[in-house]
Length: 242
Image 1 (tube, rainbow, N blue to C red):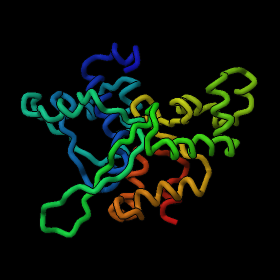
Image 2 (image 1 turned 120 degrees about the vertical axis):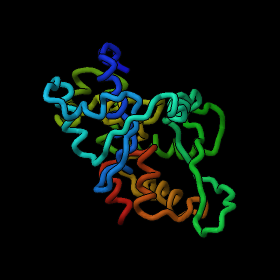
Image 3 (image 1 turned 30 degrees about the vertical axis):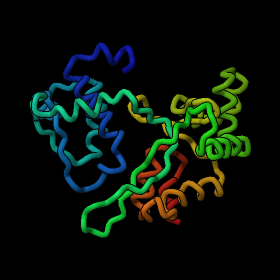
Image 4 (image 1 turned 90 degrees about the horizontal axis):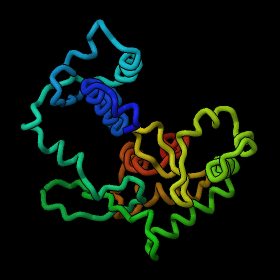
């Protein structure tokens, strides 16, 4: 949390957590189907209907309005699984992934696969390094992202002037993780590895997720959902569909 957010009242912190969850799982939650949000803070059930709203809450309401959900109260003592999931000390979202077959003992015909982290920050030789190097090399051929990287490595007036005005406005969404550029909508979003405008590189990622036998032959929607968890490039969904 940001220093200012740590000073929020408990009520607003609970809403902050709900907002984070909606951003995190946005690709699965947007749509007409109603879903349920469980909270151990009973007042959240009526918070969004209160006639007395702070400016912060008014801004958040416009975001919440994009989703079709109901808030349900569940006492903390009855919701211990949520606590366990939110306290994984070994989770690092900034990792590249591959798919691995998982034994499927049921009688249906679905393909059972899972994403396995490969360790994007590994310093020893590993299978992920060629992909990491391919991504890093591709930045040099993409003038747009190359300019962003130059600014992040050397934030001066000169490097900032070489960015377009829209890019300057969104520059806080970008960061460097070693030689990789990452993108996050805001502090609640998990940083994703930026993939430059390299059709071969993007095709490789889509192939490994969609076409490869270990990928489970996912459809467009699930391929997009799987890739967008860890990677970012503009109009990714449209690119995958074609």
